[in-house]
Length: 322
Image (cartoon, rainbow, N blue to C red; front, side, top):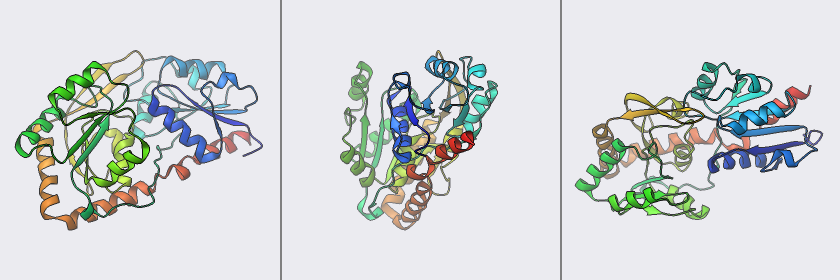
């Protein structure tokens, strides 16, 4: 690939930049914050949601020299059809592909997000408790998820629950912490500490009701954690219902942003509470089944090793260059 000058760049937010950095790392490409500051590249991989920066990049740069890795959490509002159809468009899930195609955007293929696979994972007998990390947004901490959490804590205590509010702390972070004092505000969680948190817990509490992919549940799976989650479209590409504890979606509702509609998959707080109880009972009485679940999740996650899945971008560039 040395004969092609490829750079990788990204829009907002930070999680998208992290994806872009891994794409660059997997292919030995340069990451640049501003692709316009570099004039000698031939191909650009641009990771972004459907904000106006995506429209600008796709319309201003040479046709068929940009691969847009498009992420979204619902139907797209911005008028990207004309600009994106000049370029190659990749999505991380079939859900996002459908959202783009509904807007008339041609999607060339689906390349899932990749995760870093840990060198060593603890046995389930060395693990306990529940872990979750997310910055504060309503879709990351929906009221029905918090109701389930409150009911569980009131009945069993919070001694085995570790929840981290990450990102720049806002007033809502502190307000949520006053309601749930065991929640920790930490920005950022140091990488070694984060790995230990994944590795030390049995269950990952995916309280979120909206994702375009859902990287943190897959990261948790790579450490053998069992995911407790609502079963909505974006995570159905990789969550195996036979290896995790899933609850049904009872309703979908939409949140309007400038550039997209967020699809919220509303789940029942009582269903999620019961799922946590099932997890608790298994941790006390059925570690054998948990070991099978854990091994299953690790096998699934290995298929998403970023060093392998992101090499598919290099294959696309080879095809374009022919």
